[in-house]
Length: 624
Image 1 (cartoon, rainbow, N blue to C red):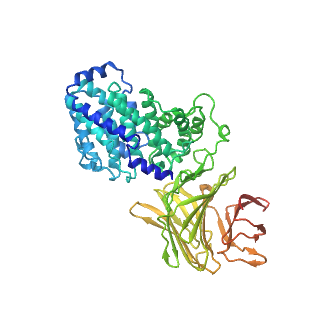
Image 2: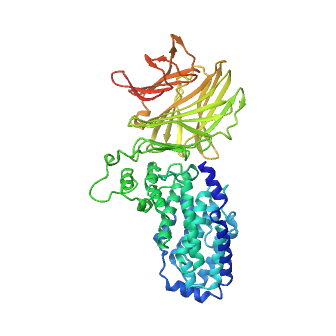
Image 3: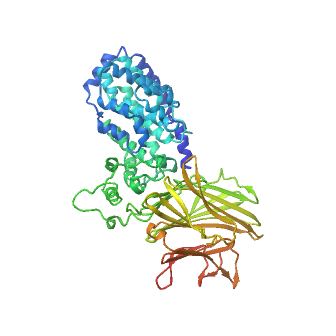
């Protein structure tokens, strides 16, 4: 529901008081038509007012927070031009020409004329980057408006303003970056113009409308604790930077945003810290290699009201401590490091706030969920390509959506279970992250009520630079990084350990040449009897690099009910051992019953436990 309202918001940029906006646009056009006659009066007004937002190297740097290095390098010459603050007629002519080029070709930016500033623009890596490049350029140009009024002429000013006014409305809701584009063009751009030209009533009025729009947008994109909707996860870092800038701009212009807005935005720094993984990289971000510099983190921490987010940032390694006392995990042990939001259709499971702690992030807004798994390094990243066949026919997943059916978090584990209804079938996805023993149990169970053949395939994309090492004679796979050795171990525990044993399943690896990354491929097939059941496909992913290369073994366990062995499509149990540590997992697949496995009696739906040194079972998760 939240996502659809966001899409509606993006497709109707002027839906807030549209009649007032139309009147305002007419007044603005009339004012611009008369700008040459009013030019001296306008310049006098602007000269009398102190600049609310000064253009400096620091302020321009803040515009680039959270952005891909390639994008920033493409506008580097323009940044230098803005920072130099040249005031010659030639400089202003260049700015005016650039503004017109941006506005006329916002969605075909390769022909926009920015080559007059830099040849690198034509080498932008993808067409999707070009609208962002245009929007960022527009913000940079807008930061020079005051100097154009004071030192330029009316022709330059009118050309720049008309261009910037028109570019505000070029956001395409189908663009993958539409949320960030909307924030920049429909909110930050008019606020920037207002802060430069607050003495001019049409721009002040437009700034007020943008401030109102700002409140409306954040209400749509964030919950009360500022956890982001899935549609803005990929750009949360640059969005947080823009929100911080816009709050500063609104305050400088004395635009009221409301107490409820500020109460919501106070949570942004904590979520900002939570949504960072190893090496200061935002999780599920659009630019996987982008790092959040400490100056960027400090910038967002300005919104932190009580210092809690700062302590979390210090523990996470995102910023340096302030004062003599070093922040400790004990200071924030009451703050859950992860978050699950059915409203936002996203989740993050974290073992702790420490920088190298195992982390699992999931965007389940589509059937092909985006997932990221990391420890000291990012291991898995990208969309999980799911394919199911029912009696040989592909199951249409296009209209299916995940729902949260179970979640829990304690000192031992974080557990999340999702349900996906697809026609007559149901898929249940389980993610169990061990906070202390550092492993991920990932499983899909496809349920069918009657007889038939089920086929299941899942492609899991690995992060850039992660390679796959195969073991001879057995089915496990290692994940390794060049120069850093083995980082993880993947066990397909529903398949026999020895590859010589025949089964209807496979764990393999291949390279996606288009993305230049490797991917895992897990395949399973099962024939169900008339009573139905499920195809269960779990993986045990070891997230302890020191343990992953040591001895390991796993096996399926016999499950009995009423002294009768039950089929694996009815209930399944597994035992896993890596080094000296052992675990057991059980899942009911047809109906819940009082069943026995490995000497354990259990009548619930799911059970996970470890074996302690005495060989006794210590429960991790029990789902009735």
